[in-house]
Length: 258
Image (cartoon, rainbow, N blue to C red; front, side, top):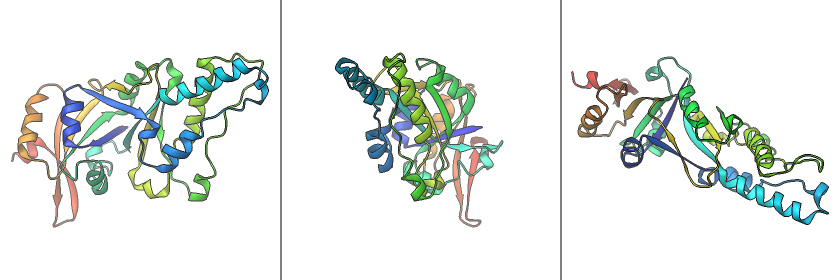
């Protein structure tokens, strides 16, 4: 499976190509109000069993706040087609318009498994990485599925890591549903839990297979990327809109030079 990340030319060249890293951000950085408001606020715990222990209660609430900042997400378009160039993941006009610099940006194509392996190198343990496709249920189903409170027994070991695991499991259940209005994005989301409360930067050197420029991107950028990635195993492509057939084509650099 391939996963595709759309971005602007500026972010792609300065922050991704030059560093060969992709930034993961907190859930508050998403653009769905149901997520950055309702689900973030929905992080809570059933503390009735420990309410009599003030110190433990305060610790649990503190652990939850830390977990909020340490869970980050990366958003991609999933592509199951073996030949991703012929799939619909890279040929999405609205994605190019909304995320790909108004058709002048770029998209990064990754091998999903290799990318997730890199994610595992940045997290506290293997449990702290989850990748999956986002579903787009009916509104009534979506808004009735806000994260339930994290619960625990007063007899179990309660510490920062145990609370983090519970919250991460909760996130896996609920952060993979979005409003139907987003359904055409076919999002593939990767959620990670890291030690740092800051942004997390995932190395892409081993998983990056191709870079695709938008239809409006100039030939100078195409040539520059070709020279930069020469003999590094990263293929360079460009989108070309065929007005006669009303179709997006993903053309390799060699095809464009004919």
